Image (cartoon, rainbow, N blue to C red; front, top):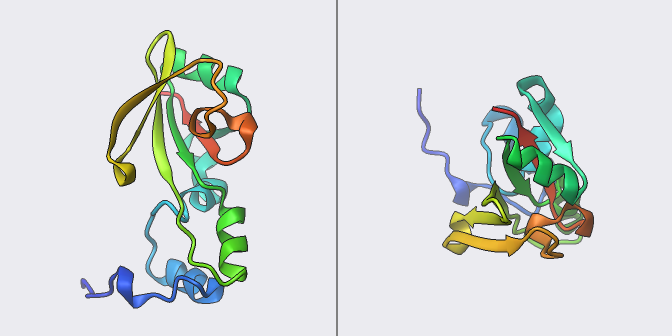
Length: 135
């Protein structure tokens, strides 16, 4: 049966409430994508990538990549009393550059050089975590 439970019904600043709700009503959003990947991603072929060269190689060989705010950062923000705003996005290979697309920022497709330090295409900067899946 469907429920009318929605995003406004959750105290997003309370880590225990969020965890309990996720157990009872699983969902994926930009605040918990990294956590979901940590928990079950490898079971479905997802791998964490921690450097830009590996990201480039994987994308050029046909892998799919999702970037996300680290779940640890989300937990720290909640513990500090702030409401976290995570980000999730897709990273693409455009041959001679990377591209990202992100619906929450209305980014249709932004290109970046392969050696860019922009956090959303460079795992080594550390602001985001990158999960690849070979297709």
